[in-house]
Length: 387
Ligand code: UD1
Image (cartoon, rainbow, N blue to C red; front, side, top):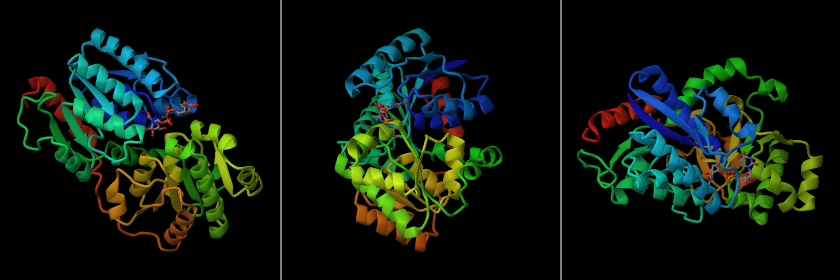
């Protein structure tokens, strides 16, 4: 029996970890003991516990309770906590997801004490180091032993950064192995879409008509913390809703909620209050989000995960950023990069509503990425890297 430690902390990591935990439960219970560490980066019930319950991942064995703080303080507290858990549990591998501060902390803590790192969602790059996530991804990839890239472009980024696609075992952090393996989030969307359909009544609850609303999420600090950008995005949401006649549903991230009153002009705040077609609702659960995505006419987002889920459900995405790590979505014509430009967001949104894209090539795998990832991790553990 091998012990692996999985680090989660932010909402999207709970979602990604669910696919791998499900695979452990279904196929590897005799071989793998998974110890889940929650850093506590996200701590509100509707940012964390709701997802743990809904996605049926095992209860975290540890919760570091770090909460919100500056990047340095938050990451340092996590490193300290994760290091002592690794010393105690002595796992054969640590599994890290995505690009948050929890990912960075796990990578630093583990690699310094020679616990091999598996990075799921490796190789993604925005080529914009002003995003905290870009630093986190690069550091994590370069501390890792097994790097699982969901997309071909991610895999190619790793090759460009010097990772050897022909590496031979034994694998270790100086001789890492890179994989192009599909996206665990696609596994989850396939697995949970049917469940969500049967158990979730958010469409009725919000009195929406399927196909007759726009869905939006905004949480990147590059948007929420820059007043002109936040103002421009909200003006665009109001404008698009006016022009299209469709309501915009905005499940709000706590960071964005705090910033609205601080950053928006009183004119825009008044319009939000008066024009009730922009409907700000509390953060949605995972199953609710799937149902909202599946039934939306159009999705506007600065989230990586929501961009992808839009694509999984064959919905067009207006991306509220200047660049994306998920370049395949742009290449397919299913997403447009509109940054925070009011004019571009409204015009691209209207174009997508009038001419929805039809081609969604299968670029995120076959829905079985987690099983493949675990089979490779197990082979690594069984042979101490000599697979
Ligand atoms: C983090 C990740 C981001 C990911 C996002 C998903 C980093 C650097 N960023 O961003 O990549 O896309 O999670 O949601 O790790 N807050 C609460 N309650 C919570 C969590 C956060 O009120 O449960 C508020 C706090 O004011 C906090 C702010 O949101 O300061 C930001 O939280 P933080 O974890 O620092 O980053 P996110 O914006 O959530």
